[in-house]
Amino acid sequence: MATRKPSFKKGDRIVYPPHGPVTVDQVKTEVVFGEKRRMLIVRADENDLVLKAPVDRWEEIGIRPPMSKATARDVLRILSEPATAQSAQWSRRFKAHNEKLHSGDPIQIAELIRNLELADAKKPVSAGEKRLLKSARHSLEGELAITYDTDRDAAAKKIDKALASNPEMAAADNAPLLEGDLGAELEG
Image (cartoon, rainbow, N blue to C red; front, side, top):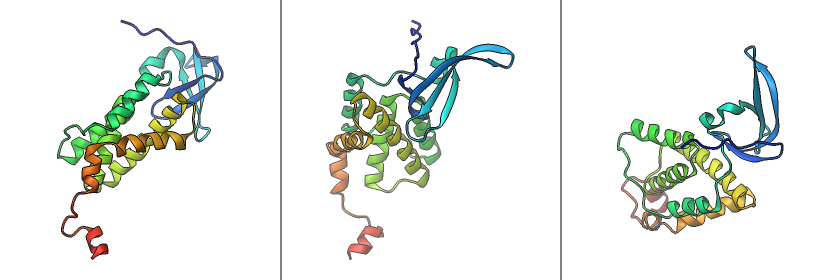
């Protein structure tokens, strides 16, 4: 079943992976490589970065309306559920996380955040995984802020609250320190 093309207009708030929430500045016709095309000109909410995309490629690029409140509830529920099995091999795990982030799907991004937050609570994750986590949180916070008509800080608190309710997070917080752990050295 084909997805119905949305009609974009100035002022619309949409999601443009991997840039997150953006605002439509205009839709205009431009000549690109000798061909007239309808172009979507958007501005990233966080840094005023201006982006252009052909309107007829919106689905391929992943441009979409912000998630619904029902999807937002699913996202927050996912954050409070146990982590899914992950590859022990760092390169495969990193690739899978990267694919989830760049999918632009809020459900997959929530799974990524949950899995990395839980892994980091048990044992610090790599610098690359920390960057992915930061990007994923940034994206999800922005979209939740649009969905709940609030600011990014309030959205971050919703994510933190959902993660705090995760039983695995509580178990990781109470886990005994491993021998040689920096925390043990500081406490001892």
